[in-house]
Image (tube, rainbow, N blue to C red; front, side, top):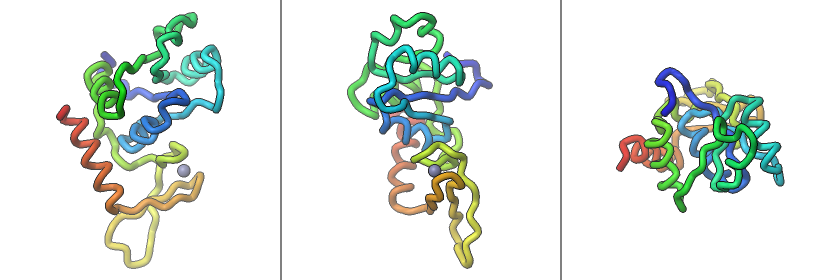
Length: 150
Ligand SMILES: [Zn+2]
């Protein structure tokens, strides 16, 4: 269990790219493993960047010092992983929703658009614009469901 005041940052291995997007949607600083990183590199990066390495590969725990930085997910689906992280890490899935770029993890900034009555945000890194739409509503529903443990 994490200390209440500690907001974790994450590093997802290659297999968990989809989960990385969801963690960013919930507001967590989440990076993605480089293509074909080896296990030792991943554990070292998690340690250096003070991130929890999320993986489904139990062998990762064999790396020296890995237990401090590695979280093994056992489920077979995004719903199962969400539940494992809520219970195992005490993770809130409603930390700061839709405040990070889903693609590159950069914090989003408000975008002043003429006449827009709904808040637009944009990513200063990859310049993607985000607006509240059906995609956001679907993601909101999933995050709320995971947050409530239903
Ligand atoms: Zn971006």
